[in-house]
Image (tube, rainbow, N blue to C red; front, side, top):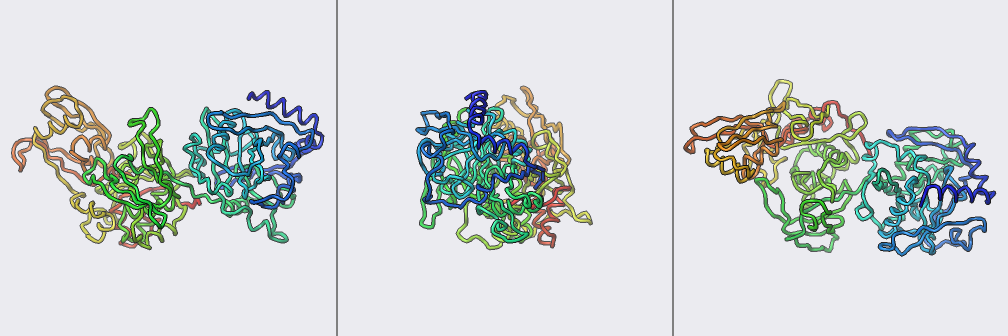
Length: 624
């Protein structure tokens, strides 16, 4: 549908529908002003014509009145033009009409041609994306039956010019914080059983479909029913959340502040998003649905490519389903098992999987904040799901039979808290043991600098190192049963004969280098971790990096870290000439050191002190 066609239709309707035209003309005279809530701009508008909508009765069931969206009940002067979605996925037909009670200078209602309840389904979600593409200059939105729908008895969307809605110009950082998704309808994270209690906003930008699903705690804030000066007649729906706030009473317009609006949204908006966790390729995994609503998966592989690689059985909450890898990805067509669940529920497992449930409360709270921050930052290298369940993301191993209450306490006491730096969520990396000095981001991943991920000495004021410990109580907080087989992680040594190393490098790299004659570090990070290594053989040489590639190339599984010195052609205790790799630490070393943080927690440091130590300049803020 061409923009000119929509504009022509709109102008024609206003030219022939006097009452409707007057309301649009009145909008031009409406008072407006801006407020900022948590870095998001909102436009307040004094619009007395919205009194009817603001005071509408909330009805999710049968509506005892003629349906004002059915064509037979609409005014003769109200016309429409048809929109027919792709017949391959939809049998619905829609009618584009001018909304006679506008919020913005252009406002359309997109009416289902059949009288059907305002309930969202996957087919209708696909219709919504289709319409957003057809009307690319517009933002299309859905108000659930108990979330601002003016006609809960008749399915419909609405549309307004997207350039008039602040949401579309909020920063990527804000979008990430509130949960804007860029995907097709099939991959949108949404619980259709709760569509009465949500608002869905969709628009297209640069060819990508953008979505924002606003899950609701309630329809209206307590101020709506209040008396006297405390009363505020506001009933938030899609546009209010997206930055356009019409107020029907002048006194509400005058007294609205950023803190009052923020309080209203916090009452009505359930900000906690859902997360999709990739458990693993479906082949070999067996499923058992339990009477308590959980799901048991047998033969789940964990520690892939590491020295603790194994298969185990885990139990999961939330929704379990399969999805195939998209075209263009390695292993395309392979079905993956995915677990969809709320973020805070996911974190209970992550904290228990990454840490022992017997850890100190302060360590668990620190880890809850960084695990939540890393997840919401969105740096995981996946497209089919948000994160995987293995160590390349965050360990997620479902729920244990007896979740320790201290884990739940840590999650609850930090609920919605994230590490922020200059208003943006931090990429809160962490590893098992930094080896006494944390590493900078650029030496392990992209050539980026994050001020809060600079290299710091993991030491007390007297210079002694936090993570240099053999305290069994502390180590048991961080190391699960299979991790505790590793006890030489702070100082370690690996030896290879020349033939062993040559064979290993050939198996891992397939470069035909022949006998290895030298290992030359070309670049080290601030912690001493090698980020570029030249491997020289009789038949040539190769340069590898960054740290994880080096760790995997020089081990059958994975070296503890790339922070190692090389003793060349040494006479080894195991016999013959070769190399000894003498290292420190376990993992990439960026951000929080789990063992160091465990020691700090035992020594009485508060979780915010722990986070300030490992992420200098960052601060903890509550996002939901």
